[in-house]
Length: 219
Image (cartoon, rainbow, N blue to C red; front, side, top):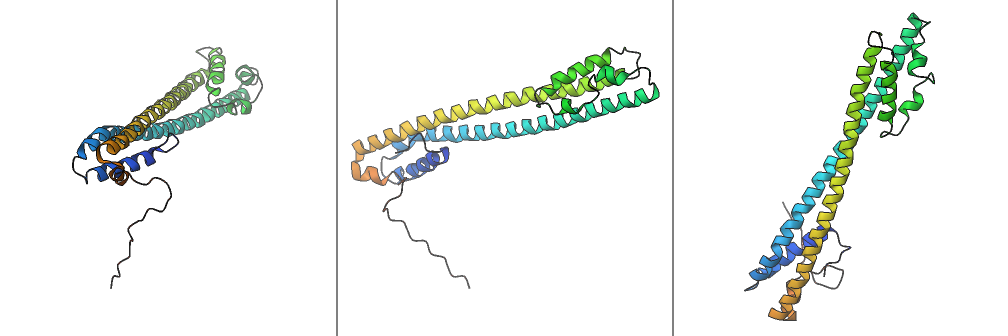
């Protein structure tokens, strides 16, 4: 029998072989028809999970990319403040926007925390006033912050989607496993133990005979 600990691939392989076996005997189609929908459903749920995993990987890549863009935007904004202060030393814009006089700690923050902190930098740029030459930095930073927050939300949604897909696949496994056992009991009742044993593949190690496979000599 199949067990909960068994992988989806083992469920599918065992069922595929079982379906082939039952179709080799007369009146076996009834058993095939009973289990095939569960078999096809598990295939579909596996494919859905794999697709969701791919989307999660893509979302993670998108967030990493958005974070690197945000880091560079912070560096550029800091450099703009330095340049402005060199030209106008009395204004001290750098200390207004970056009170610590540095940006390293900001871009070292966890990916999901950095956008909120950069929002504060945006507000400090805005406090300089719309007529200030550095005010445009607020718009640039705000744009990349929005992109990062969007990427964070997308990753969270993708992670949730994978968990849902995994749960649905587990349910499909359970349904298939239940029908697999029902098929065995039905086969025992209808055809007897000997036939029932023949139409279910050996799933664990044992002394079952296997057909020899020989390589052909090609001259």
